[in-house]
Amino acid sequence: MTSLQRQKIAFALLFLANLLVIVPVGLIVFIIIQKGWPAMTWQFITDIPRQGMRAGGIFPAIVGTIYLVSGAIVFALPVGLLAAIYLSEYAKDNLLTRIIKLAIVNLAGVPSVVYGLFGLVLFVSFCKFGASILSGSLTLGIMILPIIITASREALESVPHVFREVSLSLGASKWQTIRHIVLPNAIPGIITGTILGIGRAAGETAPILFTVAAFYLPRLPSSVFDQVMALPYHLYVISTQVPNVDPKITYGTALVLLILVLFVNLIAIIIRARFRKKKKW
Amino acid sequence: MAKIEIKNLDLWYGDFQALKNINLALEEKRIIAVIGPSGCGKSTLLRVFNRMNDLVEGIKIKGQFVIDGENILDQRTNLVTLRKKVGMVFQRPNPFPLSIYDNLVFGLKVHGIKRDLDPFVEKSLKAVFLWDELKDRLNRSAFSLTLEQRQRLCIARLIAVKPDILLMDEPCSALDPQSTTGIEDLMRELKKNFTIIIVTHNMQQAARVSDETGFMLLGELVEFNKTEVIFTKPQDSRTEGYITGRYG
Image 1 (cartoon, each protein chain N blue to C red):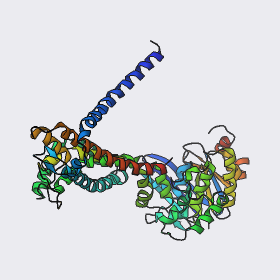
Image 2 (cartoon, each protein chain N blue to C red):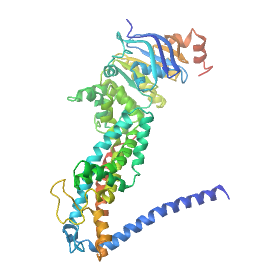
Image 3 (cartoon, chains in turn red, blue):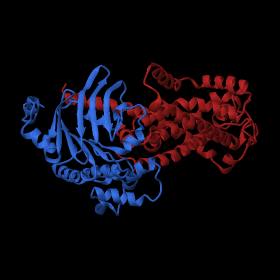
Image 4 (tube, helix red, strand yellow):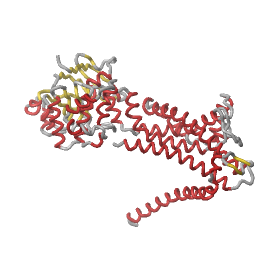
């Protein structure tokens, strides 16, 4: 076999592997759109669930998910970013720091139900926040913290070292260098981490199961100490707990969740693109 | 009194001694070149002037390094003030990924000057002879410039904070011969107001621009003298060997 033939085989294998990734994703999206689209009416999006969740809309669940995701980001982004800055810019490179970095990466792989139990113990019981938006947001926030820290750290560390040197050589302090040179150039990467975090926070069921999600609560929350419905949990409920639900409602709920995440990500991607345009080296 | 006086300077990276007993006195408003083969310690020496070596972990410095009567190796040295006074031009032109204008005012802003910046911008661009070319596109990205213009911009960025010593670490090694000539002409102009210390691989460049030259080898300052003496009648056989191309 010549090296050219071997190269062709390698390319074919790489292409197949890609196909294997893309086809299922495409199929999932296609099926959800195909089966969920008929449910997409104005009423579906703006009405409360009716007839034991077999009719009506999913408005409270949409609002609940938006609240929870926003809460998680409001908590996790600043904390995660500050932690990332500390780890990549200030912490000395010693054994402890390396263990902490490794632990953070590993935390991103912890099953979400573990976070759910953790939130139940810490926020719901110990802090006495009860099952509430606050508890749920904090639990989701803690769950996405490792994603945000890791992505932000990588973004900060990829800013060329020479920019820091120049800034310091001009008499800027370390903090001024971070604030004016490192951070602005790391924003696209930080936003990428945030996008991943949003996607995960919006889609997970287990962390909100014990901490906030309501089975059926056809009104909007009035404070952060209220329970809410949320799309992933609602989806779980109508597909397993309630008999005789029209599949178009189930798929419609999935489609709304998909569009919601896509929409939030789109905003983040646009912000990122604007920052990227400025950055060139 | 000399502007800069270095006495018995030793520097270690961990166990490796990179500078060995350097003694040197430099007068102001001259161009001083430091030449020598790779790894001889010339860049390390340059980075003592503005304490940029502080960023390296495990570094140890002994001796005296006096600029304008102050020992900058003193623990109490204010690095912000020192670096404002001793600016550095790097090997690769490295403007920030910002507009031309923002590059020029960066130093001023970090030193607390936030208003009426336009005169500073004009003055520093004029000092590097870029004003006429760039005055109408100050808001364009600094990355739209040619390499030579970028290097001039980096020098202008320094001049804006009013240093009096300019350190140049191989400032032309990324430039073509024509741009190199341009930067060398600029250095001769700047000599009127600044003390310039240039580290270079390029012996011809040292011969062309500098008033005095030091030759370094394996962490030692082998010889320091007027440039024409170094290049015509070197006292040390090692210097002679290097400038005649026997090694390096």
